[in-house]
Image (cartoon, rainbow, N blue to C red):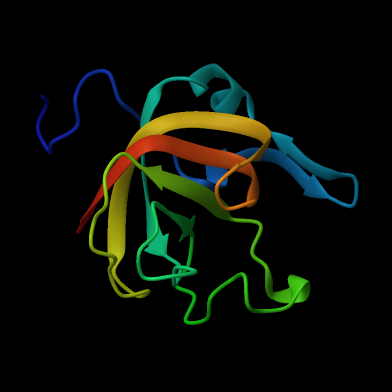
Length: 131
């Protein structure tokens, strides 16, 4: 472990480093995302209100969201999201608390068989801590 609890195998990534383009033609993943795919990464953000109290995943957002992003309209949906699949259940935190998440980065369209949720960018085998 290095100072701050991050191991040497983990790399930091920020929301501003996720995409090269976010336009009318859709999202284009950055070279950094592509190079870190399958590796442990660390990202900071906010936990969107979860779909249900007992869940193994949540949505990490760049800015706090007081409403469940799945319950608002698609015009309110933020492009700055990462789906986080936890390696073990953790107690969720308030939407306005900044957290640090570490997990294995994956990108590309993927459908979770248990929830039916489709994601483009996710962290698997993840854990988080409140900062």
